[in-house]
Image (cartoon, rainbow, N blue to C red; front, top):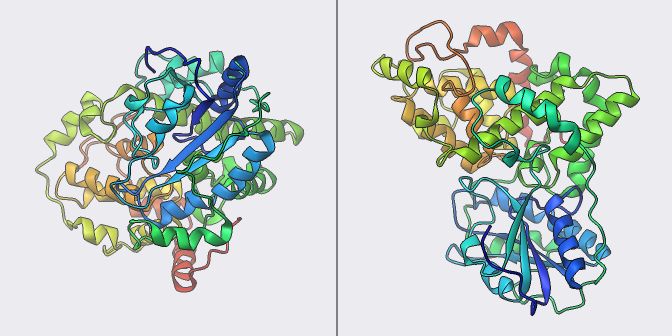
Length: 459
């Protein structure tokens, strides 16, 4: 990440957890341990949580803080030092630069520079010592492919040729030198019972309540994955597009916050499928091919939430239909508060407000309707991004921006021409009623809103 050399006077190797907030299945942390062993030094694991940015709210902070106590316990068992840097104010800067001054080198997880993370406040440019980054987000490292791919069909064969080389378990070894140095003074100890008090100290948006459906942290993530393997993998291909069936993996939030890795999910799915004689191809297509197409996109564009990144045919057809009448037409505030004429759309948005996610198939419908009911495509894009940034546990992610832009034609093909959309794919309510149990979903979300309790909550 820079041309600096390692500092022989350094007291430790610093692992900076930008997005991979986990101990297990973490190539970057494993690499930091190997670097430390070479130098005869201990490892310090550093992660931060910023009050700046659009995602600094009660929901996102709670999700991160819920994972910290278990993280501390697992790092202590390995003999790795831990510094959790919790900002209290929007103007607080992270301590990365100061900690890096005492480090022999810094290792971080590689991630597209165009994507904002909840770490915030930390500037990689301030690292003056050797800084190395290791991809721990993808199964096949995103930099394996030197150029932008334009659809799943172009990246799929490239991934298939090399995936066996990378679909191998990654263990984090114990460092030879245990951490015995003083804990950095910027460290904030977090206990389960102290989380409410810590949240009260932070200058964040308190109007976005924690998710009623998901708990942050490694143990809840492991439970969700186990539930998917035991209950849902065998029916995934059949029921994945039926929201009321709850057949999906529900790992997107924990993947986004780095509490699970795509690698360990892929390995667990592959092993479980082999043991129980299941076919897991459709799930692995989503986890590896589709997800890594999104990382490829985010890596190779400067601004992932930009209509200029659409294929030529999509930009041209949307331009030709820019003047088409939008009726009805809603404001951002009406969308955000689920005040449209469409009961299904409103239920999707209420699920976002309550759970912090929308089932993937209905999220496509949700996005298509925002295009149809916004004054312009740019307005629609900004609405989708703002809602995801503020409410979605898996927002501000390569998948987020790719899925949003897919609604405008990214990674898709031309379809029959119609008003507003031109030849961009359209999705309508009648199609949803034919293909999914809309009534069951409406009842579920109404009950979720009435009780504030999620019967599908796993952890």
